[in-house]
Length: 102
Image (cartoon, rainbow, N blue to C red; front, top):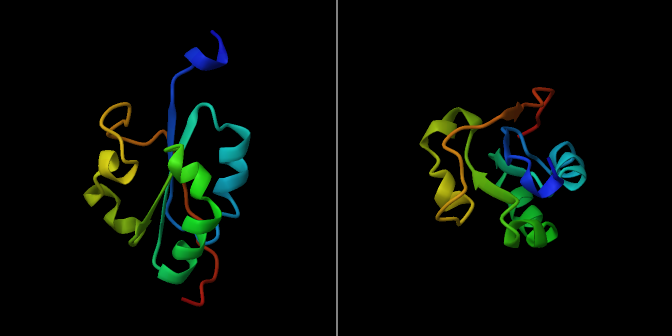
């Protein structure tokens, strides 16, 4: 199977922060991977929206200002701004549950 024909993989990062974990993974697997990042820190997400604007335009990254506990309430098609090719579930999940000062 060629790289273009491999199935899409959808991942959520429930503690996105500055993207320190997800962005390297996304960059390495960009042709196949989409990431939904959630975080409660609005200012950090605003900065990430600027810094990762290309990935957002490519519909490879979506950022939501919410707690990961609200994941089931997020409309994935709307988050990724897509009408098709967005799965209703995730293949991978990432939670960095270390100390937070938020």
